[in-house]
Length: 218
Image (cartoon, rainbow, N blue to C red):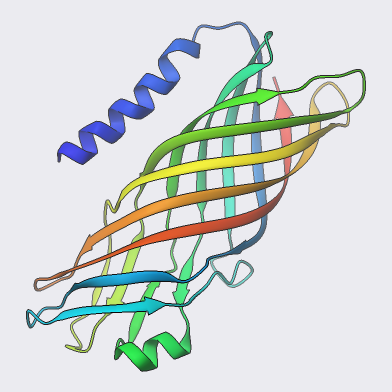
């Protein structure tokens, strides 16, 4: 509960100073390529047996449900801005990991579901191309799909922990209302989830994404 309150506080603190600022706002949708490097997994299963192993992950961004995201952005006249960003990314333990660990299922495939509040800086010029960078903090609420060697299934949404985001990209202005963008975005997600029937699982996921998106300004 304390982590939940801290997370909500981080989001509120990041957004509050900019809510009343004048400037330009936009709504964006995006998709793209998403992958994850290996991570260390540890925990205790329902039989009170400890486990620890290195997991290989697959993102499968185009498998259903696909990888996607939505974003609200507000830019001040100074070139600084803020955004609220939701990303539905995924993580599947690969076949080698399942075989070595004895897990029948280890995945977060109806979303790692990361929500962040971000501070942005764009570098305006006389052309249509506008580079930008950003960093933010938030929370992860994944759909936890885990069946350890005990064969007791966990399949539910849980608050998993804090998340951080970094991004760098470039926006291309089509006209006054519409633009398209491409970017690299990284989410660092601290996963600490409970298993049904007792036990827990921890790992830190790094989601690397190369996005293509479209924005509507208003």
